[in-house]
Image 1 (tube, one colour):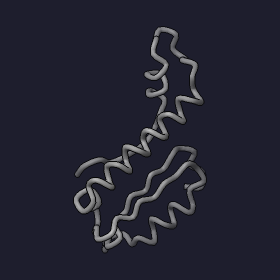
Image 2 (cartoon, one colour):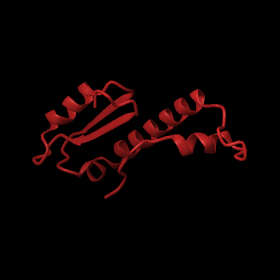
Image 3 (cartoon, rainbow, N blue to C red):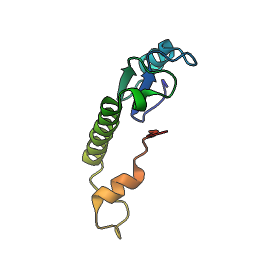
Length: 102
């Protein structure tokens, strides 16, 4: 995580018995990039979207929008001249991993 230059969104259940929540905080602290963390109260392993769907999806989509706009602001020139829409050029180069749903 220390070498990561890509935006990182960490979502973890407070009651996760499989992966301790402390590990999510360790990853967050180690990341030297744009980052955000969401700890979902009462959620076990992979239960965040079920326990708090509104908070979960709002966080994911809000993070995506912020990172998308930040990326586009930095990459206004399109490398592929055949591509007329700079937003699509930016989207093709944007790499953000998110697991949504089950």
